[in-house]
Image (cartoon, rainbow, N blue to C red; front, top):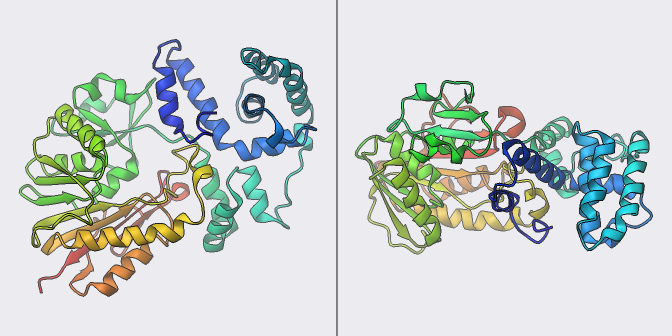
Length: 422
């Protein structure tokens, strides 16, 4: 219910589960049920509507969400159907809507008996509707991707978005020998050399290795974006949209903590968090500057590397954020490119001749990626496509496009541009 009001699933879960009432297994189950129910909301509502005379939108919020949780368990978990029904009834009895226990029990038992008879849109007559309902994605989103990539690719993308993402850590090689992470708890990532998939119980940010600065929590895709250009010791570097500093701190580690890095962001609380990470990781090469990159006076051609991980629609990380698909609108793909162009233009002022400019997003939308870079190159004769690390997946010339259903990680984009010596 709090997510429906605009909260983020991950933040709500972390705050709720911190009280220690559940063990690691219980926390994992609570997370899986909550995240899965939110992801599958459209499909769950479709099923419920076929067994309820009361329309979904007219149900009390508590009733609606308990029903969704019960149907999710019946359809998408190994929890026995009778147990899902019983727990749903017990749950509603703890709320002010206890009188609805009979209604909920009746609906869920009808779903159990009649699940095979549920009618869905015909995949031949309405392929967009079929994918939208069965894979629980907004219809506009399915249509948008299908127009670009076709039916099979769209179905694969939506299914990838419905899988729970891996928890991934990044080894801090300045503080830890990678051999420390070679037990069964940590599995090497497919592409990122410093990435390990965490297979242990609980949150990797609660491990001793994390507390002692030997690792950070960072997705494989984010690690690969940062490696688009490997910085050298002594470089002057600007992270123009630093946020909490995941990529900033990795740039410091990659350069042996011997670069001169400026992290810029509009949110001072994020920069404060970045500096706490620096202290935990033992990094000394980063300083922060609060403000909007577009308004900051740039030193004349000062930086060897400028990284711009710009605000975007997040169309590549729909699988990582369960509620994201319901919060997005088609209008984002029309309005955000203006901001992205402004930031790219502003970042270019900081790059020295021979230096690199990396434009990055966590999006798969061409409107935010290739179209922005192409417009920039048309307007800046002193920049050319630069070299992208050959070890990176999803490369096409100077760009990298990661896709969840192809590369098994968040959808992300990076383009390397180099300023000419003119």
